[in-house]
Image (cartoon, rainbow, N blue to C red; front, side, top):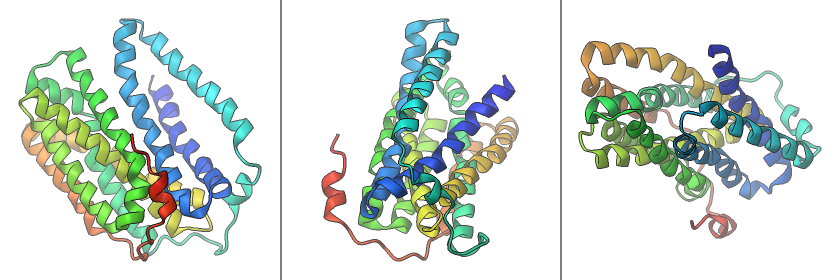
Length: 292
């Protein structure tokens, strides 16, 4: 089980860089940020659908896994046939030799690590916290993931937010929203508050992953796949480091204090700022922004 989970978890990170390279080849530059963030928000749809599917099928959880695995195989075949031929060149092209982990890249790494670590309060322990605070069973706490998935769909608008307000403003705003979501979902004693916190957390988290995606691609314009990989890999490292720490604090301090500490940890990521100039608003992006 552990090996299978590691392979499944790694697959999302391994699939993202070539998608960024494909976007760099196939999509106009003024639409690339929006396209990348819409792709990134697709994760939320899977999170949202997983719990209802599991409920409908009942105890046949192996069938649920098979359905998602089958979907992955089908989509892999579709992508093989549709990704542009120039993707390999876009993924490997470099103008500057060795990668420098300084300046914007270094700040991106710090921000993504802190945000990833903070997010484990809900991603790894959200169901347990809901059961502790609301005395819910497994099926009731599972509804929290539906709320997170519904909120995460808002991440599709991240590209438009970035074009309108810039990375730094969007970064700060959604770190604050994620912190509020962690507090509400992790300490709420009413079901409505917990699920509202899940929606807020999901939307903020997926938007922030979109921010780091765009941040990395802009910081390494000649290496879009590498720029995306740095942000996503660092989020995963932060989550790996954050989960055992949160578990330790949960046992020693209780849920309320542990949740508050990790909400503050997320806000700490806001001290990292990109020095890139704000991108002007493009009318094409506004017209192409999803309206629901």
